[in-house]
Length: 219
Image (cartoon, rainbow, N blue to C red):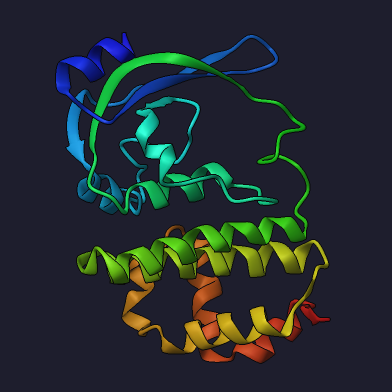
């Protein structure tokens, strides 16, 4: 059905919905709105706090072979599916979105997304750095929301790293500190959730004091 839809739409990529399947047998369907979009719309939609129309997964999509003649997955990286989808959207492709959930995604307790936080989770930041770089280069109307999404990732990594007693690199510490200081206080309304907003506000008022008070450490 996905191949047929691609042929009918003359599209380059097809994305379907998915079923989240749990160990206890519960199934939760994630449906997509049936439509046809171009890369520019899909890229901007990646920053939607309510969820993207196509998502960053690769396993609920079919791609034309030609796409992977130009691009390859990054080596030795987790979240590599998110990163490659962002890089794919740098080019102008036609994307068919199907409502039906053709893919069953088993929710394993041992999956990458559920394992205890560790240093490899910093690959998340590579994903959103890539998105910001592409926004600057190709989609200038997305630069500000890409900066906010990267900042949200930094805040998440800082918080999770502190509570999991991770020693941060000096480069990461300096980077997030600079990004927090450069972000206008009014942008707090663009953050998601009360905890994220409070943490941002505390870091904005006194970054080092907040970092040390919570037990943050640098290598």
